[in-house]
Length: 568
Image (tube, rainbow, N blue to C red; front, side, top):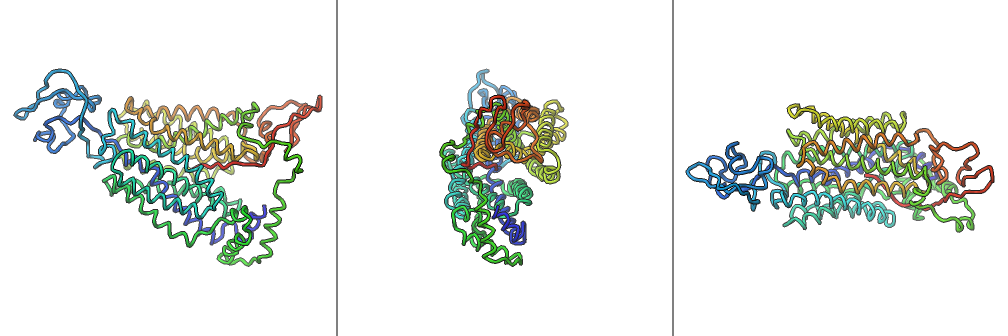
């Protein structure tokens, strides 16, 4: 590739790229703020029905205090677990409580435990009991925004450029982030959060693409993983903000305003040279490359760069005769399901994406249900991602992709399932198993993207990754409802996540290893890769499969049209 050779002349990862790359990585931090803020914005503390005399009871509920004695709980509520949404008719007289009858009634107002959270959107709008599903729905719609944003901003960045769409996303994110903090009611809050979710795709996806397009091929694995490390840093900093800012509206403002800092990047971050070349703006691309060369103290002439880029254009894989291109239909996502071996691998990969993404966000949003110090649990949940990424850096190009993916998913499944049999008094061990599961699923998440890209043939690689990413977003939308299962049994969300991880890990053993294997180019390559073929069938790479008994061609579609797909 001519562009890759030009980057190699300037320096695969010179001083200029290091500085720009670091600045771009920092934008992952506010993306993490917004993606994880829902844990605190929609935090659900313990609660109970408000009794008519709560504000008058001097002993137990002066000013609406949550705590009651065991005797008072038994008098006022059917049970401490179910009594939060129902209460008996109770009378308060001379400092004593008396139950009037055994019939219960639903709550009209609630008293919340403020020992962990001062307030949240849940406590302000009473999103509990019969309205409890509304909190999960709001988080689900946020992830719908992430899905829509990946389509919209991805297409816009391809059409209008990485830089303008990146900064437009930042502006929209700040505006709607502040609107979330000022929302007067639930529906405005949810709509604004949906828009913020869409902009997280615009910021992270475009920043990721800019970062990857400005470094040499040998550095792209490291560049991609380090971007994710900055996301993990933002994950941990969210807990720090929540520690110091207790009001949910002020917290949202505090998490949004740092986005204004990155608007200053407009005068620093260049447009992607690769995008400029794709749009025929060769002079602008060469100017950007020369700017990097000067900063890196490398001398390279305009003519030398132009020659390298021209060579890259002449090597583009468009060598088919024009009449043949018209005769062959472009490959599409449906070709992944048309042939049995490719269909089997595609379905397993889709399930891997569904599980890794759903379990990742399910665990990230489940820290409130682990008990103990919520902020500490959340901080550890973010911190364990760093060793997961370091593990990938050290092993991904040494060990097989399949062994890493399967091993990490099996480890996640086993550790999460163990939480169901650990006694509640060993709380530290429950948290340790949950965090081990989080570490393992994070490593799986970082592996499945590379593994999938190597399993899909070139002609449908982007469309395959895009479809897999869409499946992942669907599981993200279901993750908030998964955590509602803790109302039935506290460890149940972890058990479901563990069972899914274990299943996906075992199924992934059916996939062929791709490490140090040739790149798959055509649908035929993808169908034959990992399949036990008969001796009388061979593959002519890049074209079609032939049966040597009758020499009758069995064409498999090839294409050069790719769709856009990306993982967060």
